[in-house]
Length: 279
Length: 311
Ligand SMILES: Nc1ncnc2c1ncn2[C@@H]1O[C@H](COP(=O)(O)OP(=O)(O)O)[C@@H](O)[C@H]1O
Ligand SMILES: [Mg+2]
Image 1 (tube, rainbow over the protein chains, first blue to last red):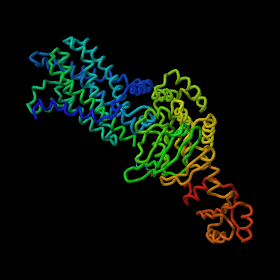
Image 2 (spheres, chains in turn red, green):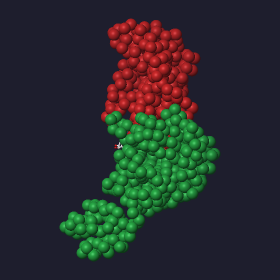
Image 3 (tube, each protein chain N blue to C red):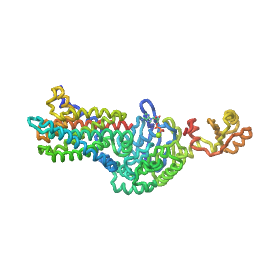
Image 4 (spheres, helix red, strand yellow):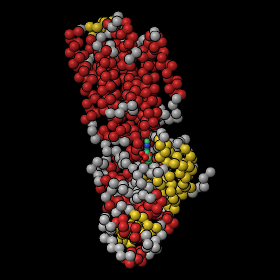
C-alpha cells in the first residue's frame, strides 16, 4: 500500500462507522452531566489533578533542556532548530496522549466494573453515547488545562517560534479526543487489570519512536511508513509544524486522521457499553 | 391503546440469555396507584423482569408497554418517569450523600434548585438529614438502601421499581425501610417490587404474582392467594428425627385439606388447627413442638411449586 492509500483509508472507515450508529450513539448534551459528576468527585481528590501538570514539565526539563545541551541543533524542514524547541511539541503531544489514555482506561474500567457508575446512570434518561462522550469530554477538559499550562511554559522558555502556535491547544485536544475515544473503546474489551499492560505496550513505543526526539528522516523508508501511520505521530507532526512555523496543507491529513479515529472510537465505546450493560 | 390507568402492560413477555429462558412468556398489568409485587425465590426471573421494565434490558419476546410507550424505542423518555432501586446498590462512593442526589438528579436534567429542594425533603423522608455531607461508604446497609430509595425519588417518578428492597438487611433496618415504603404507598406512589420474603409481599403488595422458573404461577391479592391456595389455619408439628417419618404416616388419618412433609416438620392445612392438634393427640402422637398459625404466602408458594421460598 502506498502512503497515499494509507492516508485515504480513514475515509473508507468513517462513513460506515457513522451509519452503523444509532440515534444518540455518539452522545448528546446530557454527556455534560458526566463531566459535572467527575468535577464533583475530583473536588475530594484534587491532588490527582495537580500531578498531571508536572509530568510533561519534568520531561521537558530533563529531556528537552538537559539533553538539549548535549545535542545542540536538529535539522528540520531545511531549518536548523534548537533541540528543546524540536522536542517540546512532541512532549506536548505525548502528554495529551498519556493524559487521555489514563482517564479513559484505568478510570473508566473502575467505573464500569467496580463502581457501577454507568449502571446507575443508565437507569436515568442518560444513554450509552452520553456516557462515552461524557468520559471523553472530561479527559479533554483535563488535557486542555494541562496543554495550556505547558504552552505557557514553552512560551516562557522561548520555544514557540510561530503565531500558528495558537492552534497548539486545540490540536492537543484533538490528540486527546482520538486517544481518549480509542482508549475507552479498548477498555470495554478488557477483562482484568492485567490487560492494561497492553496499553503501556502500545503507548510507550509510540512515545519513544514517533519521531519524538529526532526527525523521521533518520529511519529507513519502511520504518518511516510504519511510524507515519501511528496515531501519536500525527499529533507530533501537527504540533511541531505549528510551534516551529512549518505549516503545510498536509497537516490537515494528520488532523483528519485523528478526528476519524476519535469518532470511530467514540461510536465503538458507546456500542460496547450498550452491549455490556444493557443486556 | 392501553387504558389510561394501566401503567405497565406485559403480554407473553420473554427474556432469554442465549439458550436459557429467564422470563418465560409472562403477562401482567400494573394499575395506577397500586403496589404490585413479584414474589419468588432466587433465579425466578424477577430482576430480569424488572430490568426490562426499567428499560435497561431489551425483551427477547412478547410485548411490553410502559406508560404507553415502547421500552426499546423510547427508553430515555420512559426512564425519565421511573424511579429505580436496583437489587445491588449502585451509590456513588466518590460523592457525599447529598452529592449522590444532586448528580443523579442532574442525570434527569433537573435544575439544581429543584434538586436542592427535593434533596432536603427526601433526606428528611429517609431519615438521613444528619448524614447529608458524609461520604457514602461508612453508612450502614440500611442507610445505603434508604439513600438509594431517596435517590430513586429525585425525579418524582410515576412508577417506583424496587428490586428486593430489603434483602440483606437486618430485621430492624428492614422495618425502617418497610415503614418508608408504606408511606410512599399511602401517598399514592405506584410501586412495583420484587421480593423473596413472603412477609414483605404480604405487608406491602396490594396485588402480586407468584413467580417461579420464569413463569407466573398465580396472581391475586395476598388475601385472595391465601384463600385460594391455602387453608385458614396451619398446624406445624415437629417430631424427634427418629419418629418423623412414622408420625407423618400416621398423620394421614387426621382430616386435613392437605399435608406437607418437610425435612424437619409436618404441615397440616386445616380449617381449625387446635382441633387437628387434638386429633393428632388422639392418635397417640407426641410432637416435640406444635404451632397453630394462619396461612401465609409461604404456604401458597409451597402449594404452587412444592418448594419453599427461602432456603
Ligand atoms: N445477564 C445474564 N446472563 C445469563 N443469565 C442470566 C443473566 N441475568 C440473569 N440470568 C439468569 O436468569 C435467571 C433469572 O435471574 P434473575 O432475573 O436475576 O432472577 P431473580 O431476580 O428472581 O433472582 C437466573 O438463572 C440467572 O442466572
Ligand atoms: Mg434478583
